[in-house]
Amino acid sequence: MAVESSFFADSGDDDLLESRNHVFWEAMLDNIRRDGFVRPPQRVLDIGCHRGGLLARIAELWGAQDLWGIEPIGAARARAQLRLATLAGSVRMLSPEQWKLVPDRAMDLIVCHEVLFVVQDLDAMAANIARTLAPGGRAYVVSGCHAENPTWLTWRATFERDNKQVYTHEPLAFMKAAGVHGLVPAVRPLRESGWATYDPTDGVFGYPSVGALLDHQFRHKLLFRLTQT
Image (cartoon, rainbow, N blue to C red):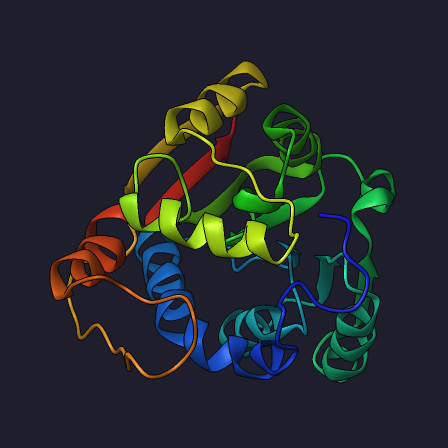
């Protein structure tokens, strides 16, 4: 995850990221809502928080007062810090090298959207989640960029041409890493219904067919739930 200014070859993609992710964030949050809470989450961590959009939405929904983010891009961390400052009592934005600053068994909710493909060490990530989740807490991790998705293999080549380091993980490998660290892993498709919005003229990460588009959004884009016992 070691990048400095932007992960994308075109930095304009940073500006479009939230609008492109909105439907997926809302699908994740709908699933979290359906799972329910004993009490609304007060301490929330977003792994790969970028500019803080998902944390802002969570604060709006549940009033979380202690927001944490892990984000490798310094400029994005700074923007998230400013954006979230008025939405919560405490806001901490950290680089991936600062995981140790996240307190043990403290987070009611951990979220992560499309980060696994830039994580080399799944075991270390699972260990960090297990260490920082509070008893009874849950982590929700979204990944569509993985070994079981044929479209990802095309996109991976594009990243590699731009000299970006990416990784192709098996979904079961992530679930195994979680289980090794005492978490209870579960998985489901992220989305069950709705429109798959897509403009073939917009961007380099395209689909070869409508079938591939629908498979990505409704079959291969997975939501993992990791529960702390």
